Length: 154
Image 1 (spheres, one colour):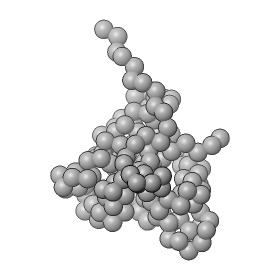
Image 2 (tube, rainbow, N blue to C red):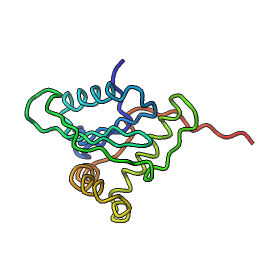
Image 3 (cartoon, helix red, strand yellow):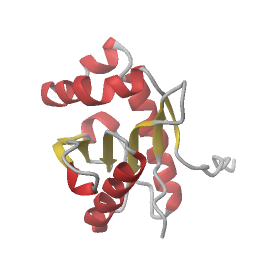
């Protein structure tokens, strides 16, 4: 199965990917998701990657020590349950689409002082060093088509 990132941040003046975000509600195979994320980062020369679940965020950075995914290292893992406030409402792909929307909105909020101020100190430092430079100069968008929101029945 091909890797299908949930969110990408692209340079507005080129097609370069500044950051890629994989969003997962199913925690059973995070190791496989990590390998796919690293492979994508290496192939696309993407310097920053995030693997986000409703409870944790893993941050990856290409150390540029080789041309393979071995060059990409996890530089942090942070609790985000109290930041994202996302509770899966069942199973399936719709949960991931919903979480992608929450994560995308959160990333966009990091372009503001108030968005950064709400983060714990360790995540704020990492965000300022890795995430903010990517989003401040780029465009945050869905990495693939998302299903339309389903209208609730009255």
